[in-house]
Image (cartoon, rainbow, N blue to C red; front, side):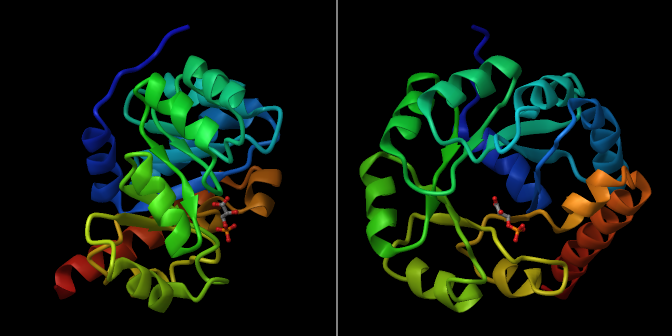
Amino acid sequence: MVTYVTPVRHIEQIIEAARLLPVVVLNDADDAAPLGEALLEGGLRCVEVTFRTAAAAAAIRTLAKQSELLVGAGTVLTADQVDQAVDAGARFVVTPGFGPAVVRRCQELDVPVFPGVASATEIMMALDAGVHTVKFFPAEQLGGAAMVKALAAPFRSVRFIPTGGVTTDNLASYLALPAVLAVGGTWMVAPDLLAGRRWDEVRERTRAAVAAVASLRKDR
Ligand code: 3PG
């Protein structure tokens, strides 16, 4: 198996620089190449490909060949999927909840893992496992930025990637919080756009999100 040993910090820096992590559900691995192009043209260089479809590993393999892109695997539920993802070229792993076996396997392979958390207890489980950057999921449904702010207060070392219900219209509330590394979601790469192979629309939604993030930087 090919493993990519990349310091966690480096991967996080790339995601933090973008402040956006598109979450992709691809049904056809042949769509991976045009999707990667659309994201790059839209101004983003990181992407999470979810293991919700059988096309995930092949799609990661294609996207990983695009050297400008940082490709990770999402919705990773088992240690076996960690192996498949890393073998395909995934350079980080995201999970919807805290799964000790998945986290352990990522750590064995030196692959950064961002487990999902929804509560203070789950954050403490992540910290016990040595993980300080977590996905907060599903963000909007759990109370949005106010909930992230409340959870961040006791956990000073924790960085969050809120995901679930995030859009260009509400990302500012999350990104205003120092504890938020980036926001994730499917809105730039929505399933209907992928189904219709509407790469121009993917590029435009990505551009709009990137522009929204850039305008926040100016406001600071
Ligand atoms: C995820 O897996 O991270 C979420 O399903 C993304 O949620 P969204 O579709 O609301 O962006």
